[in-house]
Image (cartoon, rainbow, N blue to C red; front, side, top):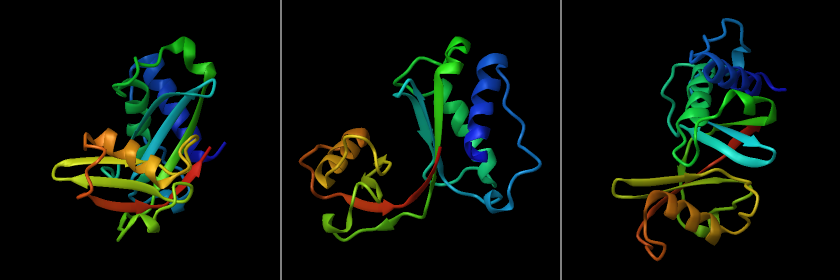
Length: 169
């Protein structure tokens, strides 16, 4: 298991069992001692159980970002009830570290298998990670992202940015 995924797992277990935030690990690979946006996804027997992340980093180092987002994914995703201790053995985790978003000039610059997407209209903003099961067209990717942002599906006057992720499992 990758160190970032192990960290997310330990953070969820510590929070779920004891209600405590896992301490930032003093020993962690230097390549991850930088700020970055990150999403933590939790699945239970293959079904999504929680997913929370940050587009822009809120912490000075990625390990702290992962800990905070893991806790939010297991306890604060509004789509799900908080994770219970008896579920922990059935959970699997992934961590997506986001690259910098770049504006796109048109849909032809998108590919849902390679790029995540951010849509924005005024104060509304939505994000969808890349390479998700069942999301294999740009149209579907944009529709889901608009829905998440509360933007009308037929709205064409939106800002679109793409980003790459490095996914760890």
